[in-house]
Length: 345
Image (cartoon, one colour):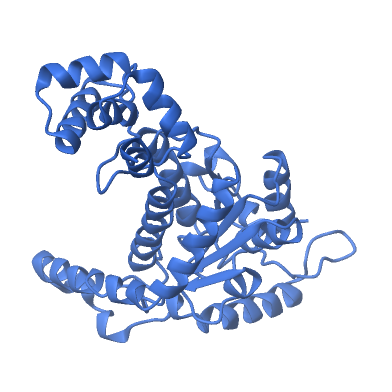
């Protein structure tokens, strides 16, 4: 049974910090005694106190008395330290990306799993992939403890359940070709750890993204990525530096994986889904940048390609018809550069 914790007493990644904590022994009537609650609070408090992301900064204890501009300068300075913390983990990030691309090239999916802010960041990254890279919504998926309503409302106890994470993954029909990324600033959130453990037991590739060193989440995963950004401006508010760090890493995981999968041509989004006027204009701009062709040739190629940017570029650069361009792209596994080289051979 998961613990019940109040909405007002949790950290940004939804780890519990008050109310009935996990591990409090129930009485014969089912409710924990004051003594067992006190002991469990003491243990949990000690656990949280050991986390870098929970550390108190006495030098900022009177930040509320500073002028607004001064607070903004301090906060901006804090944010500036995040990229260097990410840089320290680049070899681990790159290794995780290469393994992710290999799984996805075999038809696997990229699945993010987290609670609170971490879960919301995963869903945000997943939701941006279809319009940017023309992926199916089922290819990159975000799971949040408590389900979709947890995007805006804290769902009590959901983050405490490893079993809930396993059930959510089973609902996706998890396979050994999939990649599951557990996200947790603290690195101790049961939902994220449970997702990684369940996925690994089923042969899926696992990545643990946290912001504390020597985290349980990183230890549970095939690839442990720990971006240690230090204590937050507001004690325990991991939507700040930790959230920024997680967003940067998720940007890398999805974007570079898509580059490896041939979803770009150079730095052009040639798999962009033109679903509105802005994106249709961008499609024409991308074809122009890739080919240098005049507008009338671009319009003709896009029309023949049924709006597919990759196909239109290949029609122009290889001087082939749409059917041949489609065949060349299919043979090249969707990699435009390889298709161009094949046409020139």
